[in-house]
Image (cartoon, rainbow, N blue to C red; front, side, top):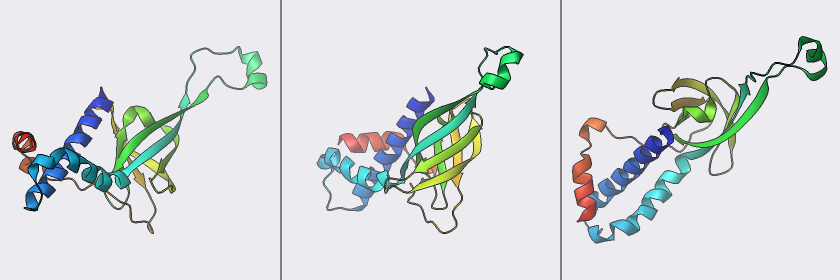
Length: 164
């Protein structure tokens, strides 16, 4: 459910960005709005990252204590893969909470240009299945999605403008 909400929000953001750009340039024809999605994707895709995470998974099946020295603990490491969006040039990333879990051993963010960075978990919201990560690299300037003020966005007019 959270992934679907995340996808819808990202889609609306890209649509809004594209419509605002097409409204600001009178040379663009609104009838070509379908073709303009490729432009929005080109602008947004550098800010989309792959997220690789490792989490400790507590196995409920306990081995007998006499076997623990031989087989070790019953805890396992689970890996997961997901995606996220860089929201600021200083490295804050929005992703889904189920991708990184409640506590991750290691989280790696891979940019579209192939660079990989270790990211730390800043916060999670299990109710909305969202998580915020941070890449701590003072030398890097990351590509990011610029978010607009949600109080100024009128979704109905965006939809009507895109139909016209």
